[in-house]
Image (cartoon, rainbow, N blue to C red; front, side):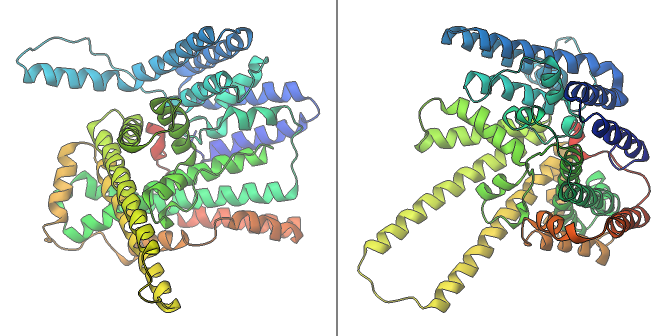
Length: 490
């Protein structure tokens, strides 16, 4: 059940209406939302409903055990078992085939051919997201940041809440569970904010992302040898915009749908393509994942002491490498994560040396004053140099992220630097989509919040006409059909 479809619109209309009719009855409302979430997940593939319930059950009882135990060593055992079971489920479904394929290649290279137990395993949609939420719930209880919930309905709803179930954002228990104890409020500002986010997400997905995919990115990555260097470069930039619009579009719809049901999710994207450093980019891109990796992977690698020196650089690299592997069981994702890990380390090293140089200059006797124009020019150059470096590290790495195999990535790079071939796919329309999407990144980040406040004085009939007209315009101008969201595969 894809978001931009009639099926989901009908489903959400029923859930929206029934949930607010049940407002006076807190527990039945939660039970209804839980049932709706399981229906939503079962609509994809009912065979994995038991897996979702198993994951929730493991984390529920791990939380109860942590509440009852007093000895720290006993609590650590519960956390280890709970996290291990979560990772075992994720690893089996997501990495079983990748592990056996890699082992087969190693054995063949060593001249040791073996018959290995290959199985045809279907990857359950959203397994990475609800697994990560379960792990964070257990670990946060152990760290004393939250308390375990007594009600299984609340924990099961937290794990399976349908707006974020299949592709995030990864919602923290400390943020969502307290909201279940409060009476939801649906005021005009929340309605406007929710609808604006949904319209934004639909436009990003069904218009920008879809057109870029169908008319530029997919053909080039399918057969890069057949296209010239300009089309290759355009596809590189186009895919960066496509994956941003695709995933941030999903996040917008998810956050907007949750807002219409009375729940607040944190922002998952914050103009990442306006970042002037890789650190800033990862603070703005898929924020729920990057902060999860920081709090539960990097912190586990670091240990109780604060990182410094080469140990810190090693842990940054390993975090990004494993973050790449999280995205998919393929060497292309490993290379993508390694590129970001290496470049983050280099960026930190260079910045550290630069700051040390600046401090030495500040202590040295002044040889002359730099005028305000000179300072402004330096700031301007520094800003755009940082942006250029950051954006191009990201776009070059996405070549591996998008390529189905190493052969495609190699062919892509080969054609990029050949400067041969005619221009076929990079039309003015494609250029407008790419440049326009990048330009919007430099607008203020709180536009939707400000717009929701401004629209408060607009009448409901006028507001409904504007929102309805926007939806009709997106439907009329977008291409036929809706491709699955990119992050469904993760």
